[in-house]
Image (cartoon, rainbow, N blue to C red; front, top):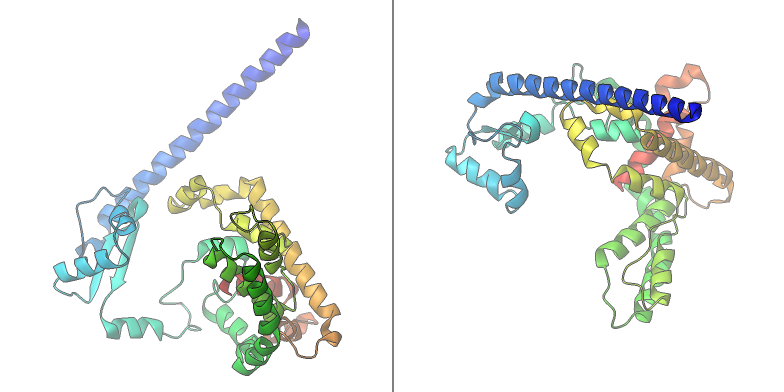
Length: 331
């Protein structure tokens, strides 16, 4: 009886504790919505031409989502008498500015990237949070430093030679699988993604993702409708990154993304991704002497800092891992 009473007391205490936590979270959520509304209502961007009159939490998101690609924007532009600048509201009162004048677009795209403060900055918070600081997410002087160090990676001659070596065997493999599967429906998007990943792995990182193995297995199993998930550790962790929960998407839009720090699965995924990136780098270091030609990862390794005094002209191990993850996603 005493044990049951103590267990009941503990459960009541935990129940009240959880309720109190939910009350605090709800209060913070309501406060954040109020702040978003005030900012949305007082924003000078509402004075620009563009659609108006929608509920601020939804904005014009549904029109864009259900309409043909860019047709809604073209309609707004026509209704605004072809204004050089327009604005509209996206989800949760987020104002979006749409430059329509070619000279304006050229000015934005050709603005100095290394100049600080950055005038036209990227808002890739999601990439920065999960993949780290790389060329896609960095700004200003940090971006300029990485771009300068990684400049040799963008030599087309290197990529062209590596492609000539990697392409034939990969193409032969996928054609052989298709020949075995005559009469079956082929998911072209999934198959092209698989061969692209394998080519990217060899050409860029001297690494076999073995994505084409899933197509071979599919071809050998006449009852399979689609290919299985790729088992490579890096790709498994990346697949988790790009399947975010709806609740975290909403929280990010409400500027409450800091709550994700308490998501244990997210933290584990980030750790697994870092470990997978480190394994690819270590394998590239080991097989460097065996490679006839250098892949991009070997050029990146040459750019890695060997001592702290060379940090300005070289990458640290963590920076190299972040660039590796972002190069894979970009590819």
